[in-house]
Length: 271
Image (cartoon, rainbow, N blue to C red):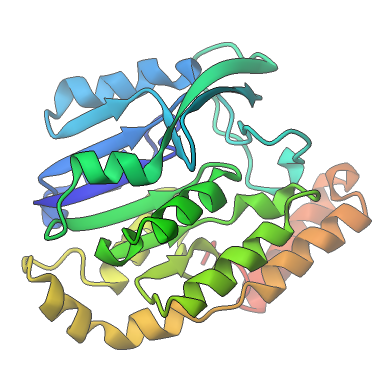
């Protein structure tokens, strides 16, 4: 079975792309713990019976926790992040509150119960710090190797107290000799979220009619080797510089100029 897992589905921005016929996913599972996003997601599931909504987040443990800034792109179980350091929020139809109690489920346990080793699994994470907990669980459980392509967005770097965990996870992936992952800094390139998702999926042949995972891994071995080896050095330093110079308070024209400069230098995803 060809399965897409949208971990941190928010209000379904990624679904606009992955539901397209060319990807031929048999099942699309959305993980979204915030009740403020569910009405939007349910609109998608009511129109496409492949879509399953899980009203909880994945992590490395089973428990109820506080979610700060629920319903926004900055919604996280980690307190103290700076939303201005990431991309602009996409408005939700629901009113935004400061916090909400949500459910977390252990990623390893969920994969063991709901997937098989021979499934063709594609994973996208955008979960404001929880990606490190999820990866930790999947690596510990020896499940990470079963995934065809795993898109990692290291939002944990926005939380100064926990940013070292990105380095630790990168080291673990390297130690385990896993190359079936890539980073949003490097593959999410395009003028819109849909285009960025498309760029990632096509890079690794996920739009191919073939469902022979071993064959696809051989055909795209160079891409897997290239993109799994990226260090994330420049994106991490960009966050540090923004924090150092109080980027949140920069005038809009300065922010626009900096984004333009990044595009010229080839450091921007919006190209």
